Amino acid sequence: MTDQELIEKAKQIKALVLDGDGVFFAGTVLLDPKKGEAYKERSHIDGQGISLLRAIGIQVALVSGEKTGFMEKAGEKLNNLPAVKAGKWPPIGIFTGPQGSDKVTAVAGWLKTIGVSWAQCAGMGDDLADYQFLKKVGLAAAPSQAEPIIKNICHFIAGRKGGQGAIRDLANFILEVRGIDVLTLDLR
Image (cartoon, rainbow, N blue to C red; front, side, top):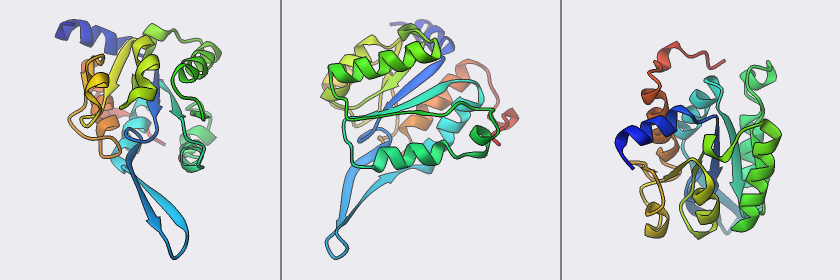
């Protein structure tokens, strides 16, 4: 794919689907044996990137094979932002449990609901559970630490790792090719 073809794909994006561990979260689970609790790391820079994309009308979904409550809680937080409460941004789609072909089914249902085609959808994943849905999206992206099998099918590879700015790298790219100055966006 040429650089110009990639730019044209990015200009057509109306939706973004993000995997959980290794993309939205850093992929590391910290355990506190005294409290019996687990923690996952994510980046506020990525959260800002998601907000920037939502501010230009791109709808976002989080799709994770895990049903541990982490993705659900993160989605809940993103759906409680003032811009969502004011009706300026639609809620984020949250899908937990699907892997492989089930991710394709979940994303297909969401895309149909919001009236967006696969060609108008970007996706970011990092491992085998994301392979099938990344093959279907119009703009496939991966964080820098993604498995080679995933990077080989992606159009965009972020400079940063998942959970550490990879989503923001993709957001910055989409905004840049559209000529959008982030300082002019209303994020409230």
